[in-house]
Image 1 (spheres, rainbow, N blue to C red):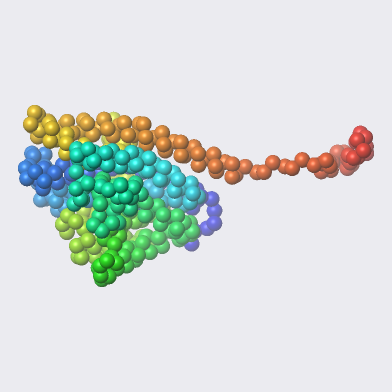
Image 2 (cartoon, rainbow, N blue to C red):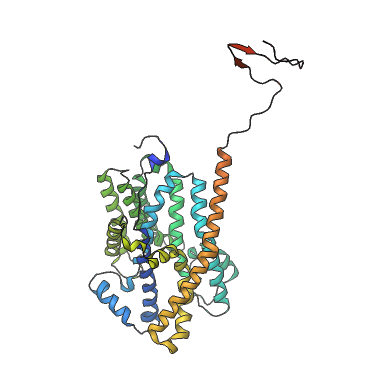
Length: 399
C-alpha cells in the first residue's frame, strides 16, 4: 500500500516526451483507415497509397484490414498513460472539469456541424438512418445516441468519447484505490469488462445494450496505458503489473472470440503492437519530436479526429474528377487541416483555458483561510514580559 503523502509522491511524474510522435502516428493511421474504408468498401476502387500500406502493415504486418482500430488504440493507450497521474493528483471536481472542458466544447461544435450537414443533405448519417430527429440530435450532444437501438450516429467517430468519459468517471470513482493500491483499478476493470461482455452475450433482447460491449472491448487499451504508467512510476510490483496486463489480454481474446469487434479478428495483435509502440516511443526524446509537422498534428489531433469524416467524402467527391485520386486526397487533407485549425484555435484552446482558469480560481478561493472576525477586544499582546491590556473605557494602554 502506498503511504499517505503528497499528491506528487502518490503520483510521480513520468515524462512521455514521445507522446506527440505517437499522436502524429495515430492521426495518420486514423486518416488512412477512413480513406481506405471509403475508397475500397464504399466506392469499390483503390489507390496506390492504400496498396503500399496494405502490403507492408496488413499482409506482412498482420494488422487489421484498413488498419482498423490501430489509431484508436494508440489514442486510448495514451489516455490511460497520461490521465492516471492527473486523476490521482487532482480533486475529482477539478479532474472532471479539466478533462471534460477539453473535450466537450469542440465536440459540441462538431456535432452542430454534423447535424447541419445532414439536414442540408450534404452529408449522410454514419448509421442506417436517413436523417436525425430532434430528440436524437439532442442525445448526440451527450453521447446518448450511441446507446439507442438501433444506434444513431450523426458523427460516427465520437463513439470513442464514450470510452474516454467512462474511464474518467471510473478514475473518479476509484480515486481512493488509485491513491492507495492503484494496480487494483486495471485488475477490477478487466473483471467488470468481462462481466459486461457476458451480460450482453447471454441476456436476451431488449435488455442488452450493444454499446456497452463496444466500450468494454475498448477499455482494455486504456487500462494497458494505465498499467504502463504504473510500471514506469513504480507504483506497483512488477508481478502484479504482468498479471494486470494478461487480464486485459484475456478480455480482448474474449471479445474477439464472441465477435464483439467489428473489423476482423486481429485485434489482439493490433493492441499488442500498439502497447509495444507506446512503451518504446513513449519516452523517446529525439529530433522527430520537434519536427513542425509532428508538433502541429499532435496538438490538433483531437480536432482532426472530430472533423476529418465530416469533410472527407464531399471534398473527395467534388475534386477527384478534376485532380485525380491523389489530388483529391491532398485536397481533403488541406481542407481538413484548415477546419481542424479553426476548431482548435477558436474553440478547443480558448474554452479549455477559460475552464481551467475558472477551476483554479474556485480552488484558490476554497483554499484561502477565512478572514479574522474583528472584535472590540483584541487578543492580549506580550511586550517586555508584561501583558498589555486595552481598557474598554477608551483610555490609553496601561501596564
